[in-house]
Image (cartoon, rainbow, N blue to C red; front, side):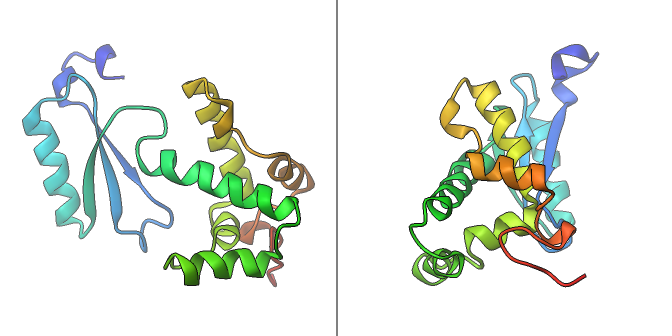
Length: 159
């Protein structure tokens, strides 16, 4: 995008996490052409918003999604294989790894359809099939089991 502008050194991306009112982290994405002053402004701006900014390069998935998308895909695959019940998978991650919630609960919060879309995009952009969503996520998306927003995902939610 920066290359298509008149002032590519002034282009910067901000990736807020959902829900933005609760999540403090913001990825500050620097294009190849981004001026150091523009990057510094972006970091300071996010801090003024009360966020925790981290600088990242402009690559597919940035940093956090490159870490979390395969993790969430794998958790869904393990559940589909019957390795453990959903509650056990979530408990293993929240208690064993100290995460605020388990991966299946997180998938329901993010949206199963959103994870499927992001995983497909990353697999395509990175030429890495390992980033693609497992069949279970596709089946759930097709069935409308999108998580909290639809009332059903890995868990059921009262509407």
